[in-house]
Amino acid sequence: MSGERAIETKEREGLRRRPKARRSPEAATAWGFVLPLVVAELAFVAAPLALGAWYSLFRVDYFELTEFRGLGNYWTVLTSTMVQQSLVATLLFSAFSLLFTVSLGMALALRLEADTRTNTWMRAIVLVPYVISMLVGSLLLRWIYSRDAGLSGMLLGPFGLADFSLLADPATAMAALVSNAVWRDSAFAMIVLLAGLKAIPGQLYAAARVDGAGPWMRFTRITLPLLRVPILIAVVRLLIHFVNVLTFALVLTGGGPNNATQTTGLAMYRLGFVDFRIGEANALALLVFVFNLLLIGANLALFRRGRSLSP
Image (cartoon, rainbow, N blue to C red; front, side, top):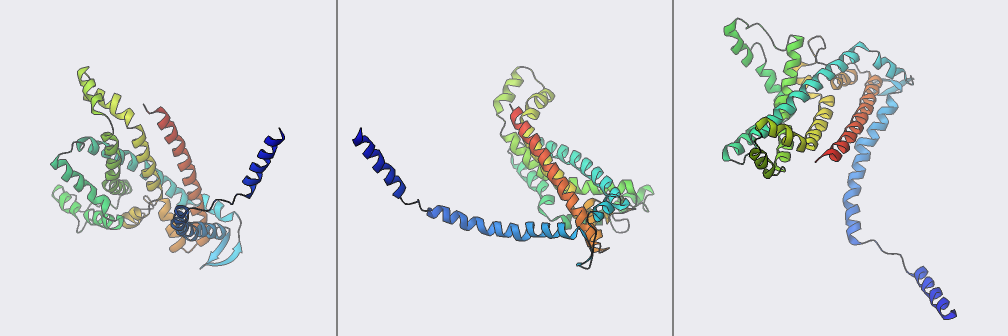
């Protein structure tokens, strides 16, 4: 027994004296790649966010803190008529844009699923609006919808509507704004849903045809259930994009007429860079940031639930 205890004692002493494992070259290389990104995130995301939260507590005149207001800027923003109108406009724009974008993306994915030469060219054509910048696309649509020099005036002229402007009426201006989003972002929905369609085994459709299932039955009983996760990914990505987008409203409609198309992103821009109410602009930005966090959390919960329910 004493011999066994001596051996155990020597083993413990050997473990204690064993030098610590050195970091492998691979770990050092990994940290070398990660650290610059962490520094960039801290410099360009965390630091501006903290500075914006600090500015939101003050009255700021040309980036000079003049008066401490605490939560006063938040109350001013929440009770502002302009901000309330922008929330309604953002809700309408996001809801209709999401509905039509995902629907058109689904139709395009189903139509262009087959790997033929024609479909390959059609996919490339559909991707063109998504590849070009939002600024260029919005300027193009602004020219098309222009009453004086655009295509809409030329097309409506023979019907006696040459003086009608799509961007001058609140209802048609919102429709034009939604069309801008659908025209550009339906390609993203098509890509995500097309990838989901490619992952569905063809044997399922063959078996359904043998059982006498028609196109609608195959779509509702096979395609939609197996596309639950890709649809959720497209919805999450597009919803966050539509809630925060600025370029569409700024370039195409300028928020008009009568603030009918002024989204929260455009309201932040005007508060900060037109009216120079920096404190209130930062307060609104922080509120939108918190809303985005809640939106992302809800969508992640739905994503986990969708994956658990996937067949």
